[in-house]
Image 1: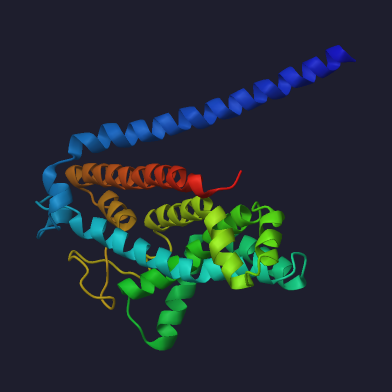
Image 2 (image 1 turned 135 degrees about the horizontal axis):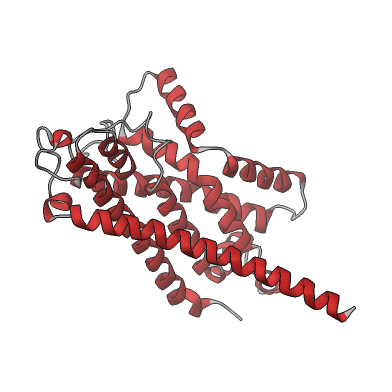
Length: 284
């Protein structure tokens, strides 16, 4: 019997090592391809200039418009999503009964929305734009991406806040605190590292998505200066650059991908640093 258990353990251990190795090798190959091809095409103009005339024909210029556009769009979408996500999650965990039908249905709805392809959100946003007679713009892109990252942010916050010990809430109530005071001064403070991580994770998801904004945000070679004008994003810049027949422009697409990778990696590192900084507020 012990030999059989040992064999099963070794088999599953080998499967886990193979899976971990496959993921690691895939990551190295992807990052290696982006770094090698992107670094050779990278130059200072890429991050300091907007596309000049004939940029997609191999002429001069850069993708500053797409870099700033991605930050504006994803930042605004993250802000909009945070304004909705945090109150919803606090209500489910502080005000509502844990097993109530409303809470169960809300979590189920968020899980379903999490699995919806981003192109569906883009199509939905495009339909709403047509209904109200709007044009592709930064605002439309923000709203669409906010809907896309809403379930991601909400469920991540929800899982973190569910880990707050019930005893802390009971102690807060016993001292005379209201539910609102308990929600923000106890629950949010205790779960702050996880909440920050959820927000930054959603921000990274918003920056890297192309399908949801291809119909709603449009594209422009200019730096966005209004919520009601089109905006360029890094994923769409990569898409358009790869679609040209000119090799030098396709090489720039890898440089754009490298910039996007660096931005997302920076967000991940920043998330870790912020989470570690606020861990001191957690009661262990």
